[in-house]
Image (tube, rainbow, N blue to C red; front, side, top):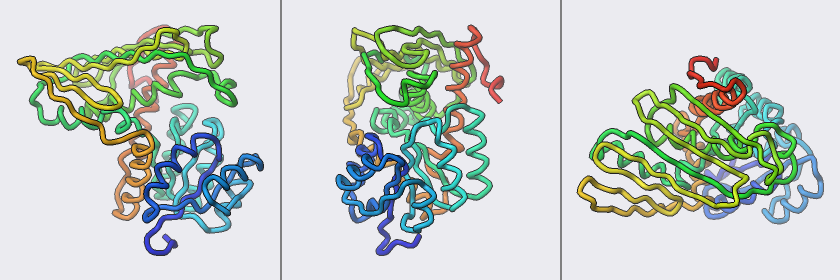
Amino acid sequence: MSSQNNVWRVGFVGAGNITKLHFEGISRHPDRVVVAGLCDPDKDTLIVRGEEFGCKGLYPDVEAMIADGGIDVAIVCTATHVRSSVLLPLIQAGIPVLCEKPFAETYAEAVEIEKAANHVGVPIAINQNFRRHFTFHIAREILQKKELGRPLHLVQNEAWLRRDRGWRLERNRYVMSVMSIHWFDGYRFMLNDEVERVCCGHINSPATPGGEDTAVSMLLRFREGTLVSLSDSFSSFTKQNYCGLDCEKGGLILDYNGLKEIREDGSVIEHTNQYDKAGATYYVLDDLIDAVEQSRSPETSVADNVHTMRILEAAYRSITENRSIAMEEIA
């Protein structure tokens, strides 16, 4: 690291709207991180974002930003289908990366990115900020105490009407690549377990322009026996948001703001979530920086997130082949 006073210099690859969320979190910790570079092929967007972030290091592409040598860590916010083209130069330059999810279009591409990072020894973290933006982290701590017994059945319904613009509308994969992937990762993290089988169905509603899956319903079976039922929709006129986990001796109701722990005797313990979305996003960046300083893997490492990408691939294959998919089929 070449920065002074242990302040890490961040470079953004892609200057779209998602960078505002990252910057909000970064701006709360000026003693830890500063924005030192921005690159984007759209000159007008680049100038606007540079003014917003107070950043004078503006570049037309990632190669120019790397060549300048002014950044210690990169945040990749490009469209998914061009991720490899910007991740690989950063990996080859030895620059740690926080990448937006999904970090690749397909599982096969994700595996190739992981191999490249492992070969060079560069840490890559994936922005699975819902581990803390949602209350999966609190649920994980409660479940580890074993007081509620074994987790048995999780039901989650997420439905709203979404109107995307730009590159997302040109991609076939939609609701699961944009949103369900957060839930897949959250379940893995909360349960500390891996999926063994996926069964998924979908519809494509004219209510929402987008890819082929504007709404999905699926079942995920985990190795330790937990069954997850997820319905996720971008094309619903009946807004819904519910996530509940039944265990042997109680249950959990999860939300963004908090978590209700329901005991066997009917008593309820309420837990408050300390993270908002910007804080949860910064947490992932800070963990990556800590990982570099401590010579360890980040919590949301590319090696860990490949397992989440594998669930995504299995779900899309289940739709295509109209059958349940065992995870060992995804290789």
